[in-house]
Length: 130
Image: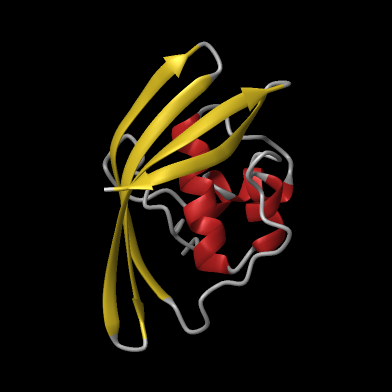
């Protein structure tokens, strides 16, 4: 059985897509995310997989930290996309809830993230915790 994608994107029958058909092409650089929601999903999957280089590469240069250290021992539990909307020709917002557990404590991150498209590629800019 194919490895399920951590982002949970469903196929046309409502089943979760396999990682190879979902976020893997973006992570490998074969196919950039076509929209902000797909980039959000691929970034969530990168957090799950510990792919710091991908996270930094998809963070807009105006806000990108010099380095990124992921929470040790985090267990990612799921992603729920609440809303995806274009805010301009090359800008969008994605509201999401990501759930994870660290040290036995459950955490629910509800955020409205901002994204921009430059030279045909989408980048995460920043977000507001809701």
